[in-house]
Image 1 (cartoon, rainbow, N blue to C red):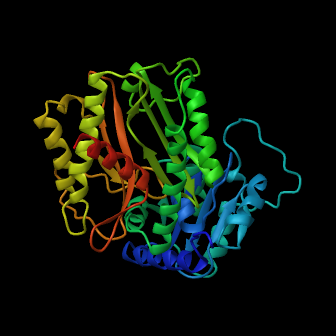
Image 2 (image 1 turned 90 degrees about the horizontal axis):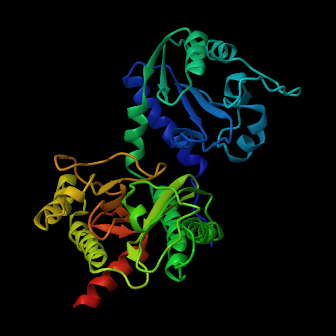
Length: 396
């Protein structure tokens, strides 16, 4: 069976939609920055994701786009970029060290020279910039100097365009969900008592890699009192003990798309208080899902969860909204709260992030991925749904 991919035609269609937005803003070229950490927008326009180095995408209103790379990452860009015009630019080299690395065979081009090349074909007075907040100051200063024109922030344009996914994007999200839940499933099949948190994380990450993860974006892992940390890294010293609450969430990437999976559980003979927290989370999850349907205001899902926690006196442990958009970033727009009037649209993908922190019995969350469909939703991490339904049925 052929694995899902984002094809060249879809990248062309994305570029045309971006160009339509450029025309509205009276922008004649767009510069999209990305690096190892802030990769989402760069992958959206060309599928390139550098390691160590920086990368960028430059396109005018007409003609083929240009992908800017560093010499060390050139071969990676050749393999992954959907656009063939690649240029080595010194500004894209690694920013981790002060010394300049000598690449004797690099055929360097300058930002100024590339912009002059574009200006031979079209008049460019305004350039849209995406990734200005992530760009190093020295790079931005050289972009400003080399382009020699007005720079216009266009981050919100790409954020908006990324919100509703195509069929191919949803397929990639579905595969990312399958991979992430493989990591969690491996944990549920393992006796974790006596292991360190890092050992437990390794089990989840190994299973996700084996299932096809392009990258492990993060693993949040904690046990016992450490579950009260909202975003903890696994401890090499903390041993998971009998009765511990265990909070392990894994975010796996496939073709740039990230899905997160986390199921709340405790190990061994655990306390009534821990059971009550898990039960409250799962009941809140059950309350939330009917609200996930096209045309329904997003605030209704947020309110459903928060109203339940308030009714049970748990609101002081409810630290942030219980859902957010998901796609090329683990957490992306929309990120609704109780006042968000926007409605769910078919093609949007969301993570539930239903959580309680600092309560008696310690803390946990439910992370599951869903795609909004024409008549409801599709669970992209169905392991979570099956686990939660089994929990609820066991009480009946």
